[in-house]
View 1 (cartoon, rainbow, N blue to C red):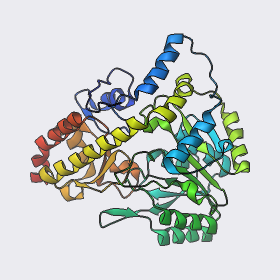
View 2 (cartoon, helix red, strand yellow):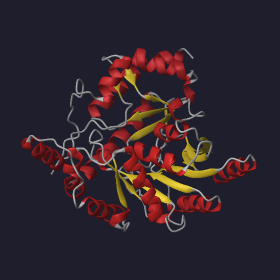
View 3 (cartoon, one colour):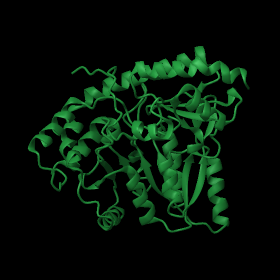
View 4 (cartoon, rainbow, N blue to C red):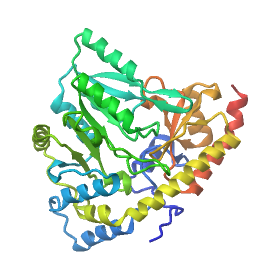
Length: 399
């Protein structure tokens, strides 16, 4: 069926983290392009599945459907040509929870954990909140494209070995949030080599894997599981893919039996047995009936991205859009403006009345960046850009 991604849905006063929480911080007259969920109505088959549950009128404790693991396997094979065993699939309510579980289960306080920076805050938090040491693998922006610095990473690992710091784990984000890079097979092979050489386990967050620019192929980290000697956990979810993050549901794909059993013990200890009743009820519809929504959505998102890039190039060229290969975020360099990050944030909130995520959320060296969520209607995005443009000359002339 045809979906209308131009539809504007008023999400205020629905306990929305993207709107109501941000309104509380910045004011209800501010337009919000920060929190990473989409403003689009979810696919019709998912809505129908939810309505059947509501019609029953009973919302008791819920178990996973019998075909849950098979559905994930079919999806991985159809979307990524990756054959996995059903027993590898383990339920976790959220990927953030999965990250925390892995850190708690497989590392010790003071251990080093590798993270490619800039990095999504939940990845940073999984390290810092558990008193682990972040081993930064700083991505290099070169000719408008980010790349991994394998030499720097090996040097950092060697340096920590000399200091007696045990490094046990690597957290990988693919596609990468916030830069939009989609790591290729060659890069994943080199990462596998480093994990093998330094005896690192890997957890890969692949929640944005279904959002790709036209012609771009996603290579799951599962492709290197043999090289990692099965010391791999891959996390993905339908929640970003079909805009149902409020219905918490994610998957941990764990090839190794020993690792999988340890994770299950932690899940049992944390009491994460029962899925949300709507999560259980929409799985089959999401995995089998919504591909058309996703394909149309990707086309619309690429249109939004191109619109944003052309608008900024024409009207506000000091905002430099970094070319993206995946996700529905735009990563924008602001250093040409010549103003402080604090002043820029004040400009967005107090003058333009548009909230975005400032770059300092993602690491020490990205203060002169912003992240913009483009997963909204073209009209809303254009209106937000017009607001910024209306006051743009003030910051350029006032430098």
